[in-house]
Length: 405
Image 1: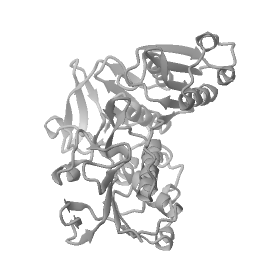
Image 2: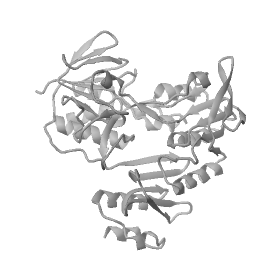
Image 3: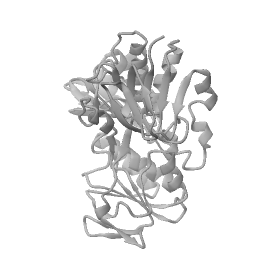
Image 4: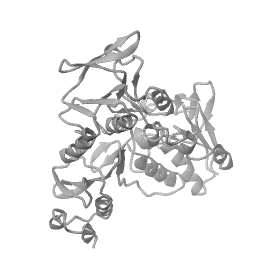
């Protein structure tokens, strides 16, 4: 039997690593350490169906408590890690206990960026949404007719806007960049999503930042924007990105750079320590990136499990993402980093379209808005390394399946 594996972080990646090892018939002792009080669960529905009251929390759990007992996975909840002693190969916990390990895996995820307290970030009524505690606190505030300000026009902010409108709140979203989705999508995708939100009554103000939040008796009551406008506000949701939880690794002397740096097998600068998911920095076509998605967390964790079980296959990311807003499904295949050209293709359904990203003439990503055929076609092309025929791509009457032979 191999020695003990300690997994720091009981989210998507941490659970996936433990589950895959057991599926591979690896019977080493596993200790899974989580800082939250609940069993590992799915995070994406927290800010959507769970917040809307359409899904009970029990349905978000990956497995019931009995699974951990039956599979000999020790799980320590409400137990943050205080320090890592690499020389002694010991994890020290805040409750005073310590756990020996032979191998260790970081699946510590990321933490939402927060507004500074100097501009009102610590006022009551100001929220980020990352875990169950956040969602539960926000749920009690999301009442029809209240005025919500969302800071940040990325996917987090836009998804929050969609949920809030469904619940009947008045929503204003501000984005300090020239447009929404500026860091993650082409103008064509941003234009389509902007129109969808405008039709649902969301007020989107681009090139607009926040000067400060205005409080009364410790609670947010207003917001002064960068153009001098003052809004009356009841609730604020902050969606301005995340920071990788790499402090524990950094303090232990493991190499970090906006995340924990790993090689193609998920190993850190310490060969007995791995990292995966949102906290891990990996190589992507010559660039160091963090792929913040459920798909990457699972795939990378399962790749690490295979290595721990004796495999040698490197992890080759095949990114895909999704975002649900109202009745719109945005599906993304590939990673558009460094794109220099896009082509937009209308879909068969009204309002559907796809945006195809190219870098030096090569397809690198596809955004599909209510266009499953474009998404599936683009993903298959990316998976196989085949290039689409431009003549077919720009012809809206052509069947995309022809590009797959």
